Image (cartoon, rainbow, N blue to C red; front, side, top):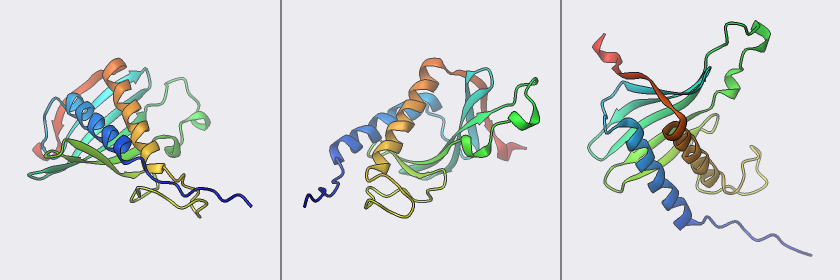
Length: 158
């Protein structure tokens, strides 16, 4: 009988991803960090990513990044994009450690470092690593192909 090895997170790889993601986020935000500010990057005609600053403390910040799609004027109502296909992540920035940790992703309220497999939600054992890699790809897309769609806005100023 062959038994599967228990998954062990590759901590060094995950920490490196968190460091890279932190630097990419800081570049995208241009070091502006006030609650309520947001920035949007258009990467295609009807697709953009928005980064919103939710919380700022002395050593950490909490941000949300989400993919948003505006409907084409020619698109029929039945062809509009489902909210399920508009991914959202909540990220905690640790300024003293210069790291960005994905806190939640879509329906996962708290992303764990590892999951037993199989599990009821069918998360991969390395779900946190995969989500962090996906965030890195989003951020790189915004940096390389994104056009700033709007300046920083502070919703509290209204």
